[in-house]
Amino acid sequence: MAKFVIAGSCDCPYYAKLELLADKLSSNLPEFKVHKIVLPSNKWEGWLSDTCSENGWMHKKSPIVWRELVDRGGKGMLVGGFNEFMEYANCYYGNTSDMMTDLMLKIKDENITTNYAKAKEKEYIKSLSKPIHICITNASSSVAYHMIPSIASGYIFGKEVEISLRFLDHEKKRQHLEGVCMEAIDLAYPCLKNVTICTEPKEAFRDAAAVIFLEDEKCDTDDEKRHKKLQEYADQYKLYAEILDQVALNDVKIIVAGNGFVNFNTYVLVEHTSNINKQNIVATARLKERQAKALLSRKLNVNSAGIKNVISWGNCANDANSESIYLDISAGCVHGYDSAVWGPEWFSRPLLEMIYDNKWLSNNFISDHNVHMTSLEGDLRHSASMSEATSIVTLLHDWVHGSGTNEMSSLGVKCEGWYGISNCVFSLPVRFTEGSYQVVWDIEVDPETKDKLKRAEANLKKDVRAVFQIEEEEKEVFGEEAQIISSMMSPVESPNKVAGEKLEVIQEEEAEAQEDETE
Image 1: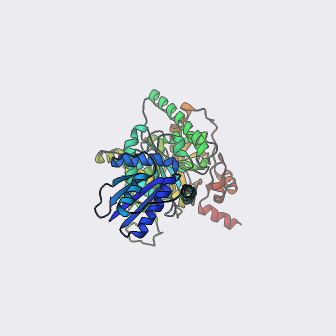
Image 2 (image 1 turned 90 degrees about the horizontal axis):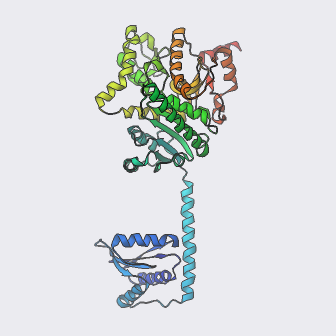
Image 3 (image 1 turned 180 degrees about the vertical axis):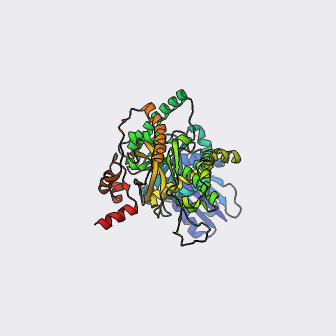
């Protein structure tokens, strides 16, 4: 059995005449099969050149005809153009065409109209699919690699939401990223609409719903080199802020993560964007928090997921020094502890009551946490990217859907005076509601803890002061002032706040209960 392929430009009258002759042969000869290819005139020459190059043919104009052996496969046999096919049909099948020129031209016009209508229909169908755009910077890193399955599977935004992934990196990383794109498509996730490699921020950030900045350069201890690097990051993130203002969605969610100057970079973005809600620019401190939970879980012999409300205050960077962070377990609790007292899933016991070894808490817990990443990467002999990637995607998931519980999490935000901290990005306790989060402002802070927070604040402000002039007025938001702000800012208002407004805050349930009793 033979199959003839007839291809031509939609504005070619000779294709129209050849098409009708092929239809006549197909209807009268059971073994004669025909396949038609009609292309817009602006795409015809490119398609013809590629087809002839692939098959080793010499043909320059519309139409083109070739014959394929359906039962044998292999490369097609070129018949030729209009004249060659007319001779072939007359010689082998005794058929020809007596179509007049005016009819040829009429059918040509119909082909143009039909081809245009089909193209418009394809564009319309394509327009119905509106994927949300997710951008990852430094996309050639292993952290970005481990994030792809969670983003593409629908875990973060839902299985009904199509995702367009954009990888932003240097041109020299393109070959590596092309391999990552191929593997991402191999995942065959229905949510993943497309994957794009970008080398320009404007292209990558355009209409973005979420942007994840990954930094893997560790801080230099030399003051001169550190100041130079801070200035470079300030210039780079000022440019990012300008581009985000121009092309990203106004409600874009921005996460800064990784090593180095994470808090500083987040501060630059917050201070130099005007069209984006300031609450939507954060730094993730979740990896440090989870590492602390893992150490506590091993001490208590429980699942690390059973440790709740452990807060990492201060620096959000994965390589943060001990002077710039404070691990707070005062509000921590334990679920699933194997003891004589058991309860339902929501039942928990205070963490401080379960750990009787105060010496371990004061010494080994802190020292082990400080060297945790170094020890881990020493055993792995490569960066611990899987845990970092998971901490980012779970943060984004909780931000979009809410945590579903009253659990507190650590999050780097631009401080507005909470706990006496201001003019820097600082990791604070927050709670996630659907699409937003609120700073938990009224945790009791004893003098010793406050000193540690001030020390961490001073450490982080050194970087800000090295590049920017900041107001030195110390502002504390507690008590009645916090209640006033809280009454003015409800969680429902959060998504609609204009850029530059303060972060909303929430009170503890006990405080709310006391107000109800007073009323």
